[in-house]
Image 1 (tube, rainbow, N blue to C red):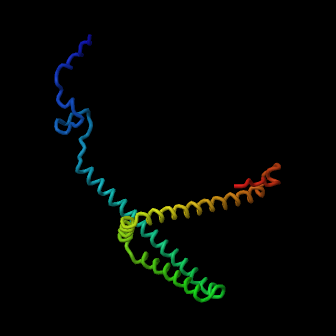
Image 2 (cartoon, rainbow, N blue to C red):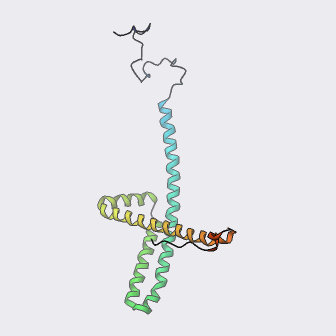
Length: 182
């Protein structure tokens, strides 16, 4: 048989069945301050605007760096055109010059467009050609992974070269360990 209920539980307590106390809150709910949702929305909008401005600033910096890097790549490609002329002929040198021009044009386009326009262009590209977008993302990921791996291998090699010179004692410092085949 069920135990007797504690005294006072046989009455309905206003608001006891609800987690939402806004309608029945008389300001005495356990000393908790009342939350003003309009104020919260205003604060959230303020934070969103601040972070959107910061993100836009970082995107502008990245855009400037990328266009400067592309200009450098275009210059290197263009400088190599003369060597290609001598080694393979002027027709191939012209291909190299056109490639340098295309990279330079892309850099100019990147520099001239606003960040919002670039984002809209990227969205349009993904909508029109999702396969190209996925392939480009995969290629970019592969390139980034290779750059990171090459950088870490260079650091490992530099650390191995510096380690014996730092005064380490024992046989390990005198003779390098054999490298395993990867």
